[in-house]
Image (cartoon, rainbow over all chains, first blue to last red; front, top):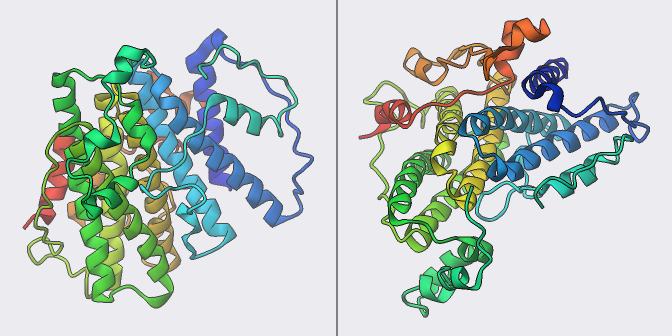
Length: 137
Length: 263
């Protein structure tokens, strides 16, 4: 988990630097639904976030116009998928959950989510209102 | 970005299922087509012939790798080199690779109207250097090599397919599955004491993988993205920063690695 924290912090700081004054401000989080004294609760929240991240990047890719930015997003999404697999392996060790049928269809394709779906899912944990009306639907 | 495809004129140019299946009564083709979601076929916008040719090339490159992976896992399962406890992991991976083969074949053949590359003949011993189907640690090592290569290979092609939203999204959706595979196999090798790797790649380390696989990991030590040195930016250690981004490989680099395993 220490590794995950460092990676996500690196990503966050990178995006803040890359976006400059176009970056979204700090968000207030609500983790009240997570019991930080429970390994299961923490791991399940981690799984939710990592799986969501992968689906978000996969869904967003087609809207990135610059090849350079698409590559940067591509470099990150595979790490999120590695994270997600690791968390799922921690939750149910040695099982096939790392790449479960709940996420991957009969063509072997992982699910994608729209901006709206992702931000709605994330809003459970974020109290700061996020305006995504300008994003493609 | 692809043009809006919602005009009636453009709808007429979409590939319908009926058009896509030359012999509608052929059951095996119907079953194959069932795996391709209708949305893929109807969402395919009019793509200029030259663009289609280059998309076909990229997808045939991906298909070559998927053939390699599928054949590797299928052979491994059949050879019984995998321990009983781990079989369901590799059955899942094999199932995904087979699904990828079929999906790519269908998109190339029925959507892009191209010719899907035939399955190459593989030599997973690399001319006798390895015994993956009798030695489980070797099987796991090559599995890791193939999965980590696959991640870098798809990543290297994303910009080449971005003219088609549908193909790009499909490629991204396969790419993340390969990354999950890679993470799981790496963790499995560490759990068994064969290596000390994590689900993610640290610096350019191949760990205990044999020297010929170094090309799969060279470049992964990169810590600068979009002109930003992330170590300077964050103070986070080089190893962790290197882990947080995976790197692309070109098709030439990938085929160089894959050629070790072509008969």
